[in-house]
Image (cartoon, rainbow, N blue to C red; front, side, top):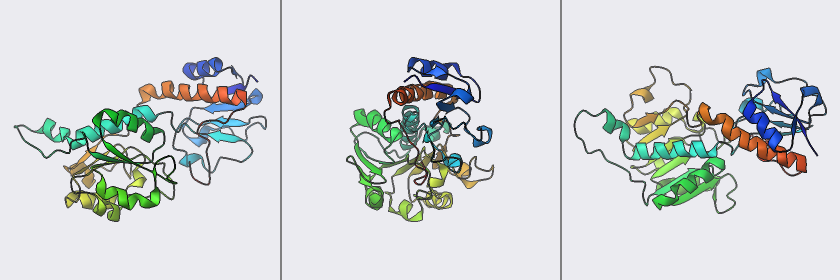
Length: 294
């Protein structure tokens, strides 16, 4: 089967090339078997879709704004896993920068000896071992770390989410890479922060709402943990006067773990794989389960 694929709302050379090299052909919406939508907001999405459309590919890994639009008459897929490598690289950078107190050292105007948390041979907890988590585990191999991976069900050698309380006290670095759902909101709260080691660093590259911001502010101010390196916050962006901006133990980057410059490249690889699978009648990557929220 050569699937007819509509790319919208505007044409994109990289994505259209991915469709073609995977055996598909670019088509107008009314003639399409599938839609690859590149706008992250549902507001521009065509409604209703032609009945002949059997599959919709969304551009982002997080699909919270789309859940009300997803229907059961066709298959919907996210970009979960597509951006695992660049986000994992950023997570690794935050781990090294935080544990080595790079920000403090860079701002210092005299030689200092800040307390550091070495990554080599440390214990790293990865909460959410999907595409990002798996890519991070690969990047961590040269450091000889002990990885404790946590997933919702605890399959494939990972620990289930209900054992998170056992993992936190053992880890020097805790990386949050889980999807944002009702079940994961404030996954890290006051009790979890209290359970962490005093020299632990919390790294969040998922969604800000997975961490209770007020509890984190209190934990950092009280020195309960060594620090937090955050690419995402709740609220986002943080208000100008938010205490996290002034917290010396907080390292914040402006949601840039998945840089715009590489979005199209990684999404194109994901689209290519899914178009080929769709044409062959095979299971697609990253199907969305509205009940689970991702």
